[in-house]
Image (cartoon, rainbow, N blue to C red):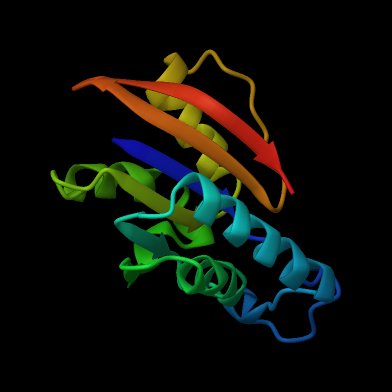
Length: 155
């Protein structure tokens, strides 16, 4: 199985966002372009992804929607369990819910949860990783308990 973790594309600055609801923070123009690039890259590399899962944050949803547009037959799921405030615990609570027959799952989420999750499942906490906005991390399941980091791409 392949797990592709995508940090949402560039969004409006949190400090300058006048609406107090951080979940409503949208992508910038640069972020929309970035999301399109991510989507096209994923479509070339993984044209038959089984599912795209996104947090409820607008910036993640919008990034995920661009990815979905480029996929043929792909399930799209939204979950609050990987919202920014959930952190790595949200990822861990959901990893056992992965469909057994899925070959490629794409998750659009946030930092620091993505890097913490990768650090935990790939390197037993020994990897120093920081995922920037619009970055894609590719993991492959080696066996029941081990994942391998096979790609890291910035857009």
